[in-house]
Image (cartoon, rainbow, N blue to C red):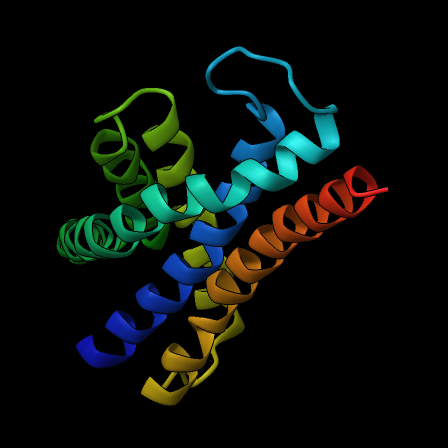
Length: 162
């Protein structure tokens, strides 16, 4: 039972980590305040930076704290026999663990919680191969974001040579 939960949490981390980087890229495309490029290009090119820094934290800290949150909520729900209490307590604990770096970690924690609950509701049989395959999501996102930067540099250099 724990192994299936752990695998589901890893999958939730890969999905929510990629979505978090995309959302943060479009919410804050210029983290240093300088407007050098148009909004859309800035958003697409900063995604890889956000992904590099946020994904490992979401993967390790997020999975660990999410498991702790769910286990505590499960324990409390067994005592009171209310399923809704488990969801509420788990959500509150996700929020508490997400208060580390306001507002970014709170948004990531809520996104992780929602993603995990959606996966849980699907009642799929999550296995290790699926968890390994889920790492393709942030990897492809990173390659696309880097590719956009390289293509733009190539076009800029090509135009500059004529």
